[in-house]
Image (tube, rainbow, N blue to C red; front, side, top):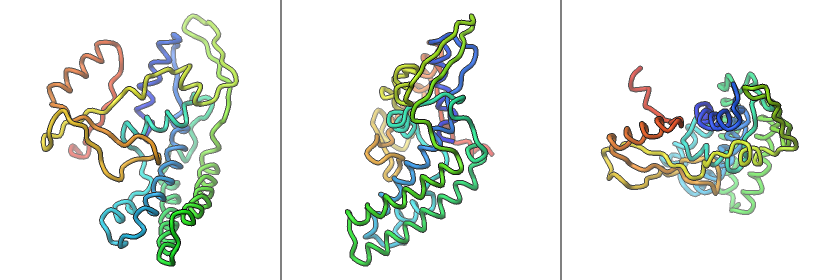
Length: 254
C-alpha cells in the first residue's frame, strides 16, 4: 500500500505536536484515492497513446500494471496535497484495503476493457473531447467499485482524543485538506526523494516517463546522490528526532 510507511512519517508529527500516546492516519483513505487517481492516470495515458500500436512497449508496460499497489514519494505528496488526510478512526481499514489482490484484479480487468474501448473509438475516428467524455463515464464505474469495496471517503468529520496528560482535544467540521494543513501541518511539498544510481550523473534531478498517479500533479522526481552523502543526511535527520522514509530493492535479498 502506497500510504503504509509514508503516513508513519506524518503521524509522528501529530503525536509530538499534541503530546499523544498513540495516533494513526488512515491508510485506507489514501488507498481509495490512489486507486481512483491511478485509474484516471492510466486512462489518460491510453488516450494519449491511442495512435500507437498495441504492441508498443510503453502501451504494453502500462497495460501490464495499470493500478499497482505502492508507488513513489511524490505520488504520496500528490495525494496528500489534493485529497488531504483523515485519522484512522474516521476511515478505518476494510477487508479490501488489507487484502487488496481481489480488488486490484477487478479494477485491472475493467481498465483493460476500457483501454480496448478507447482504442476502438480512436480507430473509428474519435478524438480528445469525445474520448475524454467516455473516460468520465468509465471513471464513474471505477468510483462505484471502490466505494462498494472500501466505503466512500468522508467529506467532513469531527475528531477527538486525549493527550498523555488526559487533556481533551477536539476538532469539528474538518475537511481532509484542512486536517492535513492545520492539524498535521507537515511541510510535505518541501520534500524530495534521494536515490543512489551510479550509472547516472550525481547532483541532478531525474524522473521516469509514464510513472505517476495524478494527472497534472508533480512528476516523480529523484535527486541522484552519492551514497556517503545520503547516509550522512539520514543520520542528521534521525538525530534531529525526525523519521526517515526509505525504499529498498528488497527483492534482491529474497
